[in-house]
Length: 257
Image (cartoon, rainbow, N blue to C red; front, side, top):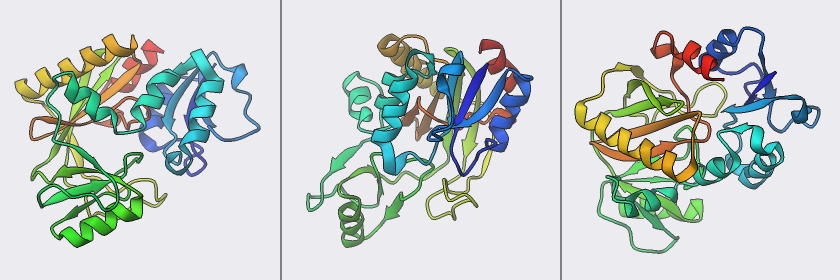
């Protein structure tokens, strides 16, 4: 039996991952990651899915991942690495095209405006904001106790999804900064649509996933988010996989599992 790990706000999974649950056809159940009643030893595999409430309890979440151990997908070391966006410095150091990123402590000088301030540990674009005013940006950084800062780039994001190391599908995501949160409060409302990535986008995402596979070994899933042709994020822990946007994607992931 397979557990699809989720959170208390989504005990039955979000609509997208319910497609995966259906494709697994009785071979999987949702399980809340911090529910003390769950016997994780009873599962052959545990797949990290909608665990988006970990942000304020990252150490507890990582301790849970370590307890699940080798049965976790993606594995605990990948989850640890991917849940702190400081990993972007490692991607940049590897020569991959990463959107210019700084990690700024409270009171430190800020890059040029306009810019985006976001928490280094965050999910669903919660607490991320565009700033055109330096004082407001500095206040945001101070409130977060230090933050990731990137230049504001106009345009849509392209998210490329990989399953078992192979490219599966992509979506375009409209601007989300300033959008309202969804009913669960776990992420900002998104406007998404299926997309065909450009050749340049595929080349960048393929390079990133090849690097990640060499770094960590085989991965069950990954998502490369690009903005202006550069890496905005590499999601290897608990990304939305937008299975509903690609017919057959849920079945492909189920077959891998």
